[in-house]
Amino acid sequence: MLYTAVIHREEEWFVAECPEVGTVSQGKTVEEAIENLREATDLYLEEFPAKVSSHPILATFEVPVHA
Image (cartoon, rainbow, N blue to C red; front, side, top):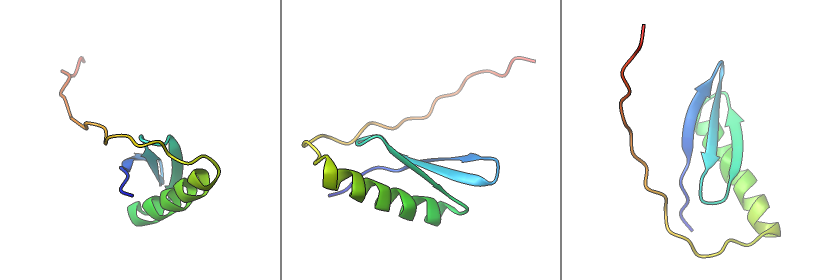
């Protein structure tokens, strides 16, 4: 099954979240964060099987900077 990873940086870590399941993990690299998220999601789904769902819609938007 295909899932989404949303990744952001927090200091020296990359944090990866799977919005379909709600799992979160981290790593020193993007690749490590995704691999750790894959493992965390797999373990979670063993205990709590996923219901069929659609992928989230991801979009970016801009907000003006206030000085």
